[in-house]
Length: 216
Image 1 (cartoon, rainbow, N blue to C red):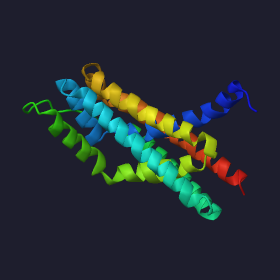
Image 2 (image 1 turned 90 degrees about the horizontal axis):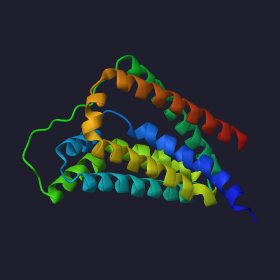
Image 3 (image 1 turned 135 degrees about the horizontal axis):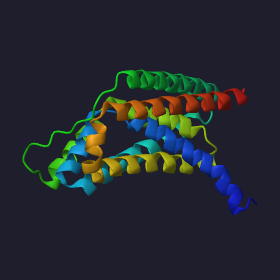
């Protein structure tokens, strides 16, 4: 029977992989992030918006990991193909992030409009989250297929890491909006972020390839 330190040392790299992968995919200039930032600036139902976005990501990630694990359980060839496809996607995503770092954008959140009730704000958050087709590619397919290839006992740690990334990012956007808004409006800040994201995605792609080739 393994000791607690041994179990933790095995789980920590998986947790960190899920955390880094989710952060790399979620930190971008987009409608959902701008909406969360806007609500933070307005101080309007911030906790509800942050909680909804984080929970939605957690549910989609868990569904992706569990669903992919079941689908790939008896299909090692398909698992390898998806791993190679995921590595290619991560490498391409990293290249795009590094290219964005050369021509950075800005994340601005409009502050006009009337105050809305909690239900209307959550409905808007749901639209920005669930009607975006990329969210399913990122969370269900990509994160799900990578998480499903972790040992069964460690998949929960991968889901926890990826979900923690979402909660921390949306919490930072929502509750730190007034401090972060000027920072996110500076192209230089996005150059640094995109450069870090690009390098992180390349490292994850390399690790995924290493894991895949080791299985051959």
